[in-house]
Structures are given as C-alpha cells and as structure tokens.
Image (cartoon, rainbow, N blue to C red):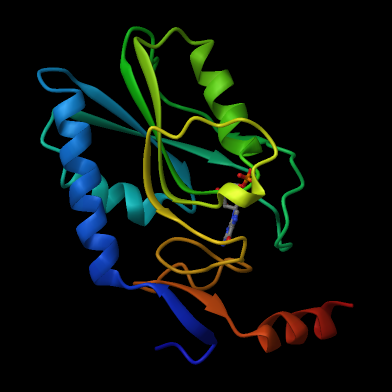
Amino acid sequence: MNSDISRILISNDLIKERIKQLAEQITKDFLGQELVIVCILKGAFIFAADLCREINLPVNLEFMSISSYGNATVSSGVVRIIKDLNESIEGKNVLIVEDIIDTGLTVSYLASLLSQRAPKSLKICSLCNKPQCHKTLVKIDYCGFELPSEFVVGYGLDFRDFYRNLPYIGVLKAEIYTRYLDSNG
Ligand code: 5GP
C-alpha cells in the first residue's frame, strides 16, 4: 500500500467486480443500440477505460474536461468547460461517466448542458457517490459504490493531481493535508 494512504476503502478486486456488473446492466439496457460514452476528465479516465471494455455494444468514446476544485478538497460549485465534445450527440444514446458525485453540482450542470443538445437518451454512471453530500437532486442511473462523506483518492481520483494511479480507492493520511497547508500557507 502507498505510504501516504491511511486506509483502503475499495480494493481493486472489488472495483473490477463491480465494473463488470455495471457493464452487464448497461449492455442489457441498450441492447441492439449504439452508445456514446462521455468520459469526464481527468478523474473518470481509468473508470471509463475499464468500463467501456466490459460493455458489449457499439461504443463511441468522447471526452469532456471540466474545472474541478483546484487544490482544495471541497466543492466550489463552479463548473467550467475546458474541453468540449468533438462530435454532436443529437439523436444518440449518451452515458455520462463520472468518477465521483459529491455535491452533485458538477454532474447536474453537465446533464443539463448535454440535454440541451437533443440526445436520444441521457444517463449518468458514476463509480462513487457520496449521498450525504448532495446539494442538489441527482438521478444516478448506474452507481458503483456509495461512500461516506470523506475525501478519497486513487483509481483516477486525485489530490493535487497525484494518486490517480493507485489501483484502489483510499483515504489519505491527515498529515498529507497538514504538510500541504503548512507549505502553502
Ligand atoms: P461535485 O460537483 O459533485 O461536488 O464534485 C464532483 C467532482 O469533485 C468529482 O468529479 C471530483 O473531481 C471531485 N471530487 C468530489 N469528491 C471527491 C473526493 O472525495 N476525492 C477526489 N479526489 N475528488 C473528489
């Protein structure tokens, strides 16, 4: 285990198993149809890569990059599009793939933005969800894991852009934040 991690919440084996189940459900729900997966960068890149390989449908992959919290660990509620989709989604089945839903503000904003582009259907898939933190009503169609209201890293999720490459989802040691705050005022 990485020495900055205090405990692992979701092991890699558990993540893999859950992704297979989600992909099976998605394959069933869209049987005989095409699907556009919209991967929200950067956090969802590992999840989307693993998920799309388990989905047995004709899949198009699109990427959107949005602003996150910067270096903070709480939501500012501000969503800025850094990179938009390359292709039109009009008349298509669209699946937004997110890493984690905290306040729900980001995914709600994205869903309302994409629904204005007249997709045939629009669904949300998130690897993790923190239901106690929602500040808006969000309908998550496919959810991997429900988590307590704790800041987590790994499997695409970062702190200051580090730890995305950890194969599991875990909690950082408190001293990592203290050290960061001490050196940044
Ligand atoms: P929301 O708008 O739902 O509050 O925040 C969603 C985004 O905030 C996620 O896509 C993710 O980038 C970031 N985020 C929320 N909670 C966490 C967390 O526990 N760990 C990390 N690394 N990022 C988080």
